[in-house]
Length: 288
Image (cartoon, rainbow, N blue to C red):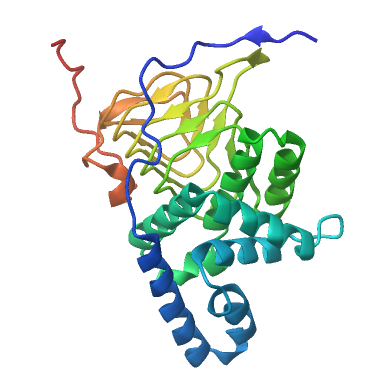
C-alpha cells in the first residue's frame, strides 16, 4: 500500500523545552504538600506515602504514579513501574518536562489548589507524562512498546497522543478527555489546551501532515485543527472551531471553518486562559 506525500515541514525552528525550572525545589514542595495531605486526610496515607513520601526523587514518584495508573494483566505494576522509573532516571529532560507541565497546570488552573494535585489526580498531566515516556521509547527505536504505552494511556485517560508527535514543555492540558494528537504534530512550549481538541491530518497523506502549534497559544474546548496548518505564536482558537488554514500570530479565530475575528487580546493567551473572543478589528501586518 502506497501513501501520498504530505505538506513539507515548516522552515522555522521549533521552540521545544527551552524554559528552565528547579526540579529539586519542585520535589521538595511536593513532599511538603504530601505530608500536609497525610495529616489532613489519613485515608489517602497509603497512596501519598507510596507515590511521594517513600520515594527519593521526582523521577521515582512519576514512575510509581504512572505504574499504578496504567498497570493491567498483560503488563502489571511490577513490570511497568521499573520501566517507567528507569526511563525517568536515565533521561533527566523527561523529569524537567514533567515539572514544567506540573507548574503550568498549577499556575493556570484556578481549581488547582495544590501543586501535588496534578501528580495525584489530573489525567491531563498524567497523560502528558505517559506520552513523554512513549516518545522516548519511540526515539530509542522501541516502537512496539511505545505504541503499547500509547494504547493503554488512551484507554486509561481518554487521551490519544501518537508517540512520534513532538510536544514542548509547560503544557496545560485541562480536563483532557478526547484530546487527540497525530503522528507529525508539533506543539511548542507554554501552550494551553482544553478537552476534546484534535490535532489531526486529512485524507491518506503521509509525511508532515498534522498541525504545528506555536508557543503561547490557547486552544478552546472542542477545537479541531486539521492538516499541516500552523497556529501562530500567541494566537487563540475559539471553542468548537474547525481550523483548516494557517492562523496568524496574536489573532483570534473562531467558527466552522474558522476565520480571524480579531486580535488575541493578550500577549500570551495560554497563560491568561481567557476564553472570551476578542473581536477588535485586526489588520494584516505590513511587510517589513
